[in-house]
Length: 397
Image (cartoon, rainbow, N blue to C red; front, side, top):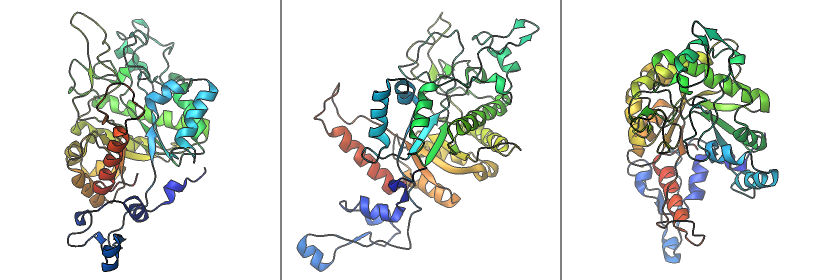
């Protein structure tokens, strides 16, 4: 793989380069040590002298990236010239020069559930909809009503129980960017419908805090994640660095909105998502670790966790983890939809001697409806957010 220039910079060098135009407060480093000093000559000339503190250096900075998921699900099936132009703008040296890609392992609703997720949001699942297996009640189907029967016969170790032709939109991107990317990460938004408690991949039925992953389904979910990753690695000649089993799990975001008297969710449920509380997370991580350690497993990916929505909730989740889960995590991921408690999340990663990624954020700082090409507020708002995250979380990516 081509090594991106962005991934070669060290954290210390990155800080000097990235923050040369900013006044970095002394609190960014150890107490009592100034991060920025002004010499008398510099004061007279209006210049700034940066004095790096070698006793407080960061780990090497691994780069910048994007989740593929919805945009890749949609644009991966665009005409060749359009999708190649998009790829170039994101991953070429003359574009954003991204070097990290997060692949979404779709869960997928039952085959008879009418479409209800937003455009691009229905990332296909990898399970085989036509197993051709019968039980005492006849042929097992992949319909919503047959979800328990399907769960009972589905075998996560059997290749015939997968649809390896699934998700061609995202997969176009994996193949197209494999020479540009130094780190692939796999993440789910939800387990497949038949492994959830509600039977839907958008969350609990009219309940955004009901548990969606039962302990008896955790081994099957681990099989699912690892099998998909290994297939992608073998098919495209890539290596996944990390697998995370959760996405913003301990939140009140994920609900299958089913109107009274109706059977299926409506469009208020806009994406896949699953509430998985701290205790369930603590159960799932060792299960995934055991699956990755099984003889015959080919992927070298390690576990990342837990991609929580903000540092404060990240800390709540971490505090519920036992020694086995903490030992199994090779990388901590946090989102920054809210930046309070960033220093606490940073300190957890440092105390665990484990890399920390800020793995997702977006926002709207424009203050206007519609697209205004002359409005710079979104760019300025995101830039400030990035600077705050780099200073306070000290992430490696």
